[in-house]
Length: 107
Length: 120
Image 1 (cartoon, rainbow over the protein chains, first blue to last red):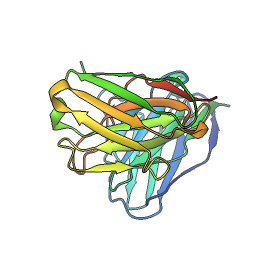
Image 2 (cartoon, chains in turn brown, red):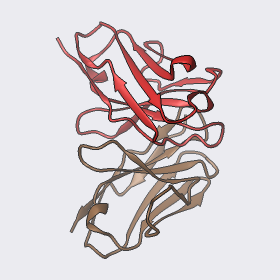
Image 3 (tube, rainbow over the protein chains, first blue to last red):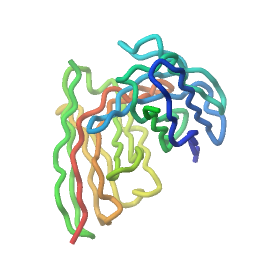
């Protein structure tokens, strides 16, 4: 079973600054990694798939990188609507698994 | 427009059963895997179960294995989750999500969820 670990648990960032979120898999998942954003009271929504491909309609300030076991989500210049919880998820193997989430909050 | 609408949640006593449904529209349902994901109050996302387009591949989280059963009816564009022997720790908002196939099984989109509360 693959375990996904995200860090940090909480990231305090000022609007306009860069945010870097990390996700680690307990074994190689190639590029089978997705990132999701969840705002309060809403269902999660897809941001990135294939570790680095932005989903339809996702702004270019969101970028994903990595392969194997180490992955990064970067938000280049945080906007007010980006303050949310972000989850990584592997779909390389069963059972599918999510990380525990990183909350991006306003500094 | 792709739509996923969950139903069947509610208040149930420990040890009892509940069946969740997810009605899908706006895409060719039998081309895609489907998944259930849950979120306990104030907690993160937990993948519960998934089923391939033809029901040939099915997976469960260890926390529900042997108690929950996922199924789909492609003729009705519907996904189901039969939940037996429910426990307090199964209390959560249950989301249905459209997957993909093989190595393209990311979840997009998600329904709005149905709330399951297990309590006496």
